[in-house]
Image (cartoon, rainbow, N blue to C red; front, side):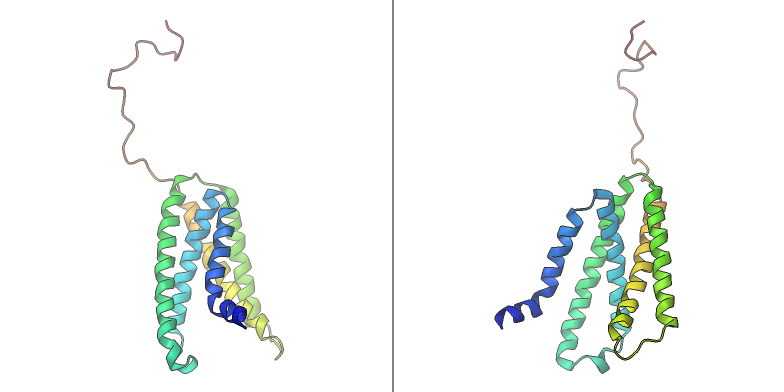
Amino acid sequence: MIAFLVMFYCWPIFLLADYAVFIRQLDPYQAELTKASHGVFMICAGIAFLRWDRNRILPPDIRFYATVAVIFLFGLGAFWLSLGAARTRWYRFDARFATRAAVKIAVGVALYLIRNWSEFEDYQPFAWAVLCVVGPFCIITGITRLWLVLRGVREPRIPAAGSPYGAAPFADGDNLQ
């Protein structure tokens, strides 16, 4: 019983620990793209939660804690977005990541359309809930990844300076004249 209570109340901690292992397995560029795009999704999920009718659905003693959790979600999402967006500027454009982001957007749109056009039976509420989350997740993270990949490399802040000793008397590299 104690193990069940620990698992029931501590699943967000276990989920974050598993997410950290997942991020460490990616290459640096893909890890930063993932952090930034998931940060945007956290912000969008928090906005959706705040627009949701919390007073009707949540019990009064849980509303405060849910709102605090959403504020934490905003902060973590903004941190991941700013960190990932800054670090992805270090890498060059890669068409492979742009193509994967475009495919992810297309999959998200397809899932969203399936959710709107399909009629689910009473025994399939899980399928409808998955489509309600996975479709927007794919659209939001795909758009963020595509934006981050297409915006280009950061410009150097300080122009490269010449030699303080002047130009070399030879112009052919290592071979002296």
